[in-house]
Image (cartoon, rainbow, N blue to C red; front, top):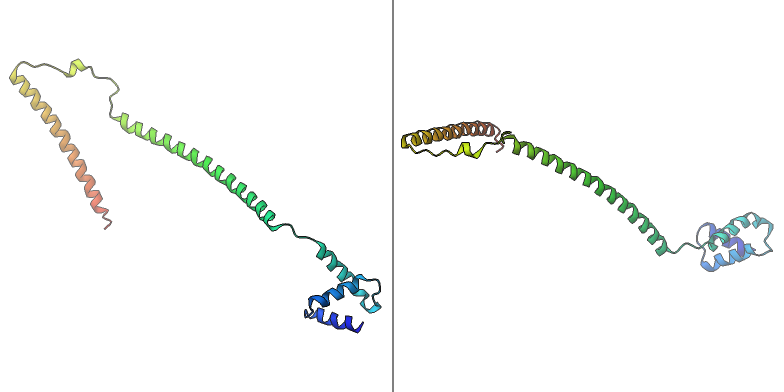
Length: 162
């Protein structure tokens, strides 16, 4: 009994060896426990029950957690991909709409008959006059576009980043 009291003192101080702890467990699992040690019987019975509990296999546990994480990540990726597809589709439609507006803005609605455009001129003076008009028209268009480019360049020079 003195031996049990000494081992209990060491046990409460966490200084017992494995052999001494085995002696305590055997003592408290036996039927002849002294009256002064009766209050510890429940504690050691619970510790015995706790020792009998087996932990699940760690590799199985990790595999299960990993599978759950992978499936949740895959679901999130699938949702993200489906949202991205809708965004890409909307961007493609918007791009096509904007491009078609710019492309078809300059096209006249009524088609020009090719027989009206091509005109054969036999008189050299008249041919010179028509050529001069065409060159004047091209010159005016070029001058107008050059002025626009110069105006835009002035704006860009004001916004000098460097």
